Structures are given as structure tokens and as C-alpha cells.
Amino acid sequence: MHSRWLVLAAALLFSTGGAAIKSTTLTAWQTAGLRSAVAAIALYLLLPQARRLRDGRAWLVGIAYALTLVFFVQANKLTTSANAIFLQSTAPAYLLVLGPLLLHEKPRRRDLIVAAALACGMALFLTGSELSAATAPDPRAGNLWAAASGLTYAFALTGLRWQAHYSGRADAALSTITAGNVLAALLCLPRALPIAHAQAIDWAVVGYLGIFQIGVAYWCLTRGMRDVPAFEASILLLAEPVLNPVWTWLWLGERPGAQALAGGAVILAATFWKAWSERGGTAAADRPNPPESA
Image 1 (cartoon, rainbow, N blue to C red):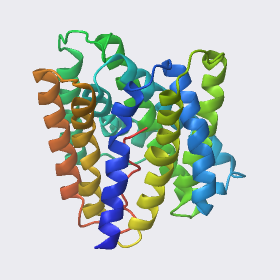
Image 2: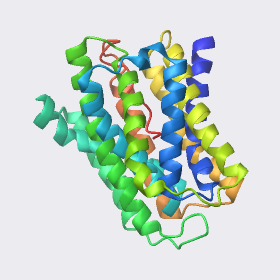
Image 3: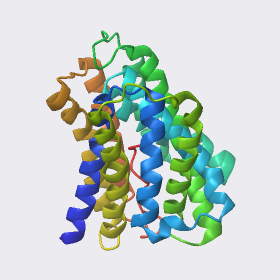
């Protein structure tokens, strides 16, 4: 039971990303860069497995994860947090193409069904006509950033499978998460400086995002996953996309449009069905992917 609470705690921390990102007066580049810089330090200190940075594969795969981190923040600054998290959650649809090309994995029938459902959910987001708001000033551009984060996240997941295959270590992903945050911080640095007019609340939010929303969240997830079956963990982690827009609504009053909610429901249903249909696999093969939160 203790382990399940840890996995759920990780999902809850991940889910606060959208509201926290929108709470800063910093630019998207500043928020993404500073968050990743703090997160890299937090991961290095909290998780010994995250310190194995001599493996070149961690840095190569980390490029895709770094882009995911940056694109996700860009999306949250421009569109609703619901759009950002749900569009990023369409990564498995891209895997239908990347798996056969890069990993020589043949798609199964249920993969095709899931991909079709995710594509329908994405279409609902991208064809919607949501009005801009203070917390979502350019929904159309933000949706494109979010869709791009789904694509880069798919590349990151493909890379993590490749990395785990060659390293033989189940915890290889943690070094990639650290490397990705380092690369994201470096990528954002030229556009983030100078940091002028930052308020105390901005630094507090950035500290929270790096230490708790990423660092402590992965610490909880790593320990919880030791004793929680993959299917249960996958279901518990669904709390992240469900609660992400809830926190933004409670904290900032942001309300996603009806079409976005419909798209999110389709994506959640497809994700749940995928986890349910794969629950009989081996423990190693059924380890859930790192959460969509970037």
C-alpha cells in the first residue's frame, strides 16, 4: 500500500506542472531553462541511478527528452494546460511509425486501434476554435507546440527502449531524464538571458517545479515502482492528465473548451484501454513509460 501511495504522489506532483508554469511572469524560455537546471541538480542529489551520465546513449536520447521539456512549457504558456498535457499524451500514436522504423517492432492490432483513437483525440484539439484568454493567449500556436512535444516524447520513449535494451538496466531512463534536463537548460540559456524583473514568486515557482514537480516526483515514482505492478502503476499515473487541468482551473480559473474536453476523454479512454489490454505481459515489458509530464 505504501508503494501505491508513492506512485500516486508522483502523479499528483507531475500534474501540478501546468498550473505552476502558468503562474510565473517569466518567459517560456526562462521558465523551461530554470526549471530544468534546478531539476537536474535535484535528480542528481536525490537519485543515485540518475548520476550515471557517462553513457553516451543517455545524452543522445536526452536530446529528444530535452525538446519535450521545452516544447511542453512553450505549450503551457500559450494554450490551456488541458490541451498541453493531452496533446503530449498522443505520443503512442507516433510510436506506431517509430517502432517499426527504429526498433523493428511490428505493430499489433490493438496498437492500431489505440493509435486511431489518439489521432481522433488530437484532431478534436487541433480543429477546435477556442478563444484566447489571459492564461492561454494563443491556443492555436500552443496546440502546435503541444503536438510537437508529443512527437518528441515519442522519440524519447523509443530511445529509452533502445537504451534499456543495450544497457541491460531497468533504471537507465533516470540518467536520460537528468541528461535531458541539463540539455534543456543549455538549450534555453541563450533565449532566457537576461532575467530581469523576476519576482520572488517566480523564483519560488521555478524552485518548486525543479525540486518537487520533477525531482521529488521521480524519487517517489522510482521507489513506488519497485512493488507496484505495471498495470496498477499505469492507472495511478493517469491521475496526472486528469488532475492537470483541474489544478489550473482551481488556481487560475482556466476552463478548457468542450471540444478539448471531448478530445481529452478520448485520449484517456484509449490510454486506459491500452494499459488494460497489456496487463498480462511480463513485468519487464509492461513497465509503464515515464509519465507524460515534461
